[in-house]
Image (spheres, rainbow, N blue to C red):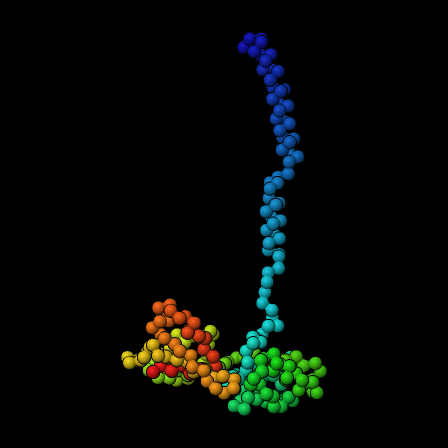
Length: 223
């Protein structure tokens, strides 16, 4: 190698060493994996954020009205001798509990019955806490009569409509007058209202308002 080439190589080595040492220093001062902190913090925020839960005190539907033959669960906090895991409402609309005695249940919501039982227990228990749960609904019944496969009395479940009731009764017999069905509904004053139901039109999407929700004591008549 000539003298000029050797001199150029000797000059290049220190320059290259300087560049490499600067790169290593910059890498050492830069935190490792800097973006990892942001996702981690957002993830921890999402997992610790409170999620909505059902109110544990809401043990029943306060719009429901208890009736005869319904089965209730009565719990008096810290009073197992007074509590009843299953107690039916008698035909007179009442239930019997230790200390409380006879309590009118029919016609009340579970919340109102809780208050009524607590009021009767106050003479014996300091600040009684009562919970009433409807275990089985037997009071809300309706009838299906006439030309259906299984006429009889049925218990209302969920949001039952006339179409649902006919299906539960097994459908029509061969000579049922499907255009002349009607619902007899009990009014508060003891009278009855007759609600027409034309099956042929309702299933075609006509007059959907005739497919009313079944109410307790309704009678569906299929001529």
